[in-house]
Image (cartoon, rainbow, N blue to C red; front, side, top):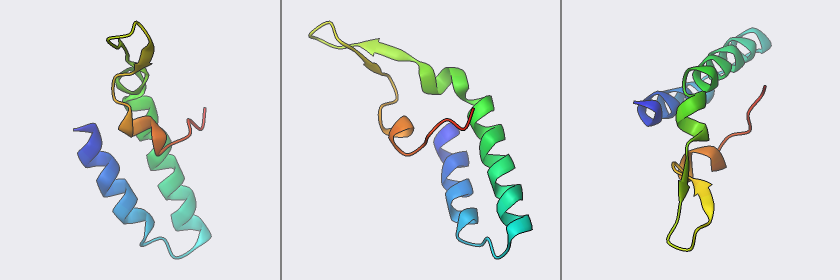
Length: 66
């Protein structure tokens, strides 16, 4: 579900035409980050004993705004 919502947000970003729409988009993105914070911060221990993000591809495309 997180990926579907993020994809939808990314598509909406292409439609932003002015500052107000941009601010609205940033708020929606911040809400998405808050909603999925636990999911995005989940860690896994790999076969070598190293911790790495469980959902490694998700965090690469974002910087936590908070």
